[in-house]
Length: 429
Image (cartoon, rainbow, N blue to C red):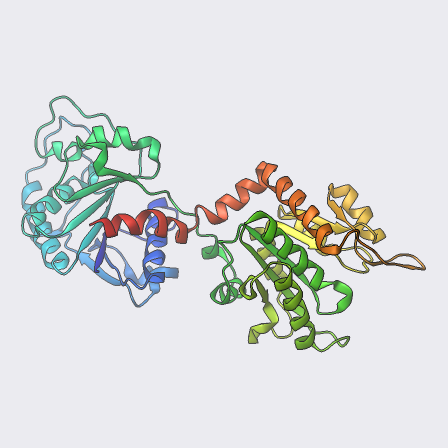
């Protein structure tokens, strides 16, 4: 399927919010194996492209914006009783010819504000003329601002802003705006859809996070746990995996654990990783639910601290069952990024810090001042973890900040919006 995005951008500055929306839609399509075509104004400086706009799979098309050697100056026809300028229809005809030439190989054309904005009236009329020669082409018309009231006696061509086009679905960012959208274009609500704006958190990520994201899913899990530390038995990595497994098993939530590990002389890394995986899967995780950053060649010796902080901004649960800590700086780092904190109550430093942070406490083996403690669980450690897993999940669900953070990462990610809203609408055609 060939898809075009009709934007008529004069520039690609990220301060224009619609540029960001289009950038995210391009990323959605490219990630799904679709190589889109983007139609912009003849005056758009493509040498200023950046980020996703530089992807070589995107076909850029400049639509004519000159007539008789002079630049076409767009005029804002937002007032429904204005008269168009003398060369308006000549300009529309010229632009329509270019639309036909560049859309004849396209199956679906996604338009952004072309029908809505007053300064796009000439393009609005031009695309309608082009459609007459492209009867098989389907259109999706996005409106990104609050719909306007239909004027009672609007005449052509100004009425183009308030009338429907054949083979077209009309789209608004929220469901609540659909009745008003239908009224503006005088279409049944059945021809209207909503597609939320997405939040592409990874677009702002460092190179380290982007490398990691290619190896494992960072956005979809209901529970995302990040645990940084030296790969030593004293950090009790296996206890994190076991509790994560219990959470998944007793909540039916999806769980991902990212271990930001670096080598230790205490134990062979591969042997300890195998033990951690074995314990995690025994308690409910799948092998894909556990990931060690040291398995990526670039991070064999450790994952950068700034990258850990970025991961904490995505994660929502931090578990520290460490056997011994002098302070626990990673606890503060995780808390500062809005994670639910679970700590080993038997470690004095974690108990002290955790009380200040209102953390949730559990009991694991620990080193105290001058002696070690060893926990026994009745009737079993599995039952102990199951009990606390259920409590932790309930507390996380009741926390509105955690809920909002998780929802923003999952529900409004480009992948979710593509798979659940935009792609089904495209396939509908």
